[in-house]
Length: 135
Image 1 (cartoon, rainbow, N blue to C red):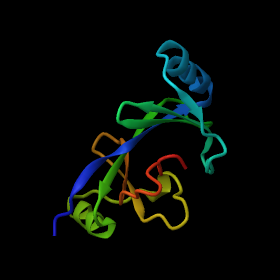
Image 2: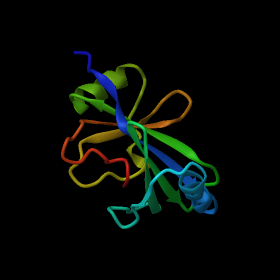
Image 3: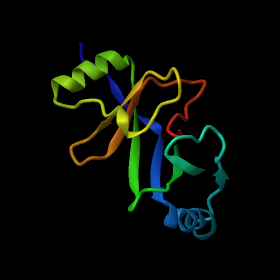
Image 4: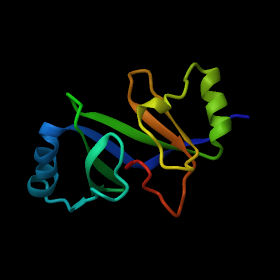
């Protein structure tokens, strides 16, 4: 069985501590977008501060990661069946990298990376909680 994949509505920009405020200011003050402080809303583990920006049809998460030296983009993929998707990806040499960041308890998902190292979360779309990219 070949799983269906589709892009999710969340993109996470992982930012070094020294660039977090500057980046929030860019989206809020330079571009005039609404920026919401999400710190404390489930932020745990490697993310020390978090903000979100409604970026057209997607939500852009700005995550401060204190030990990062450069920014990184993380993407979301939806699938109908995580186990089938994981098997399919493994047959194509793409293995889970769940050590990248912990998941909330009970979330059926895996981290993978594309050939150039951009992390993707592979998960089922959850209409109750669509923003699982923020830790």
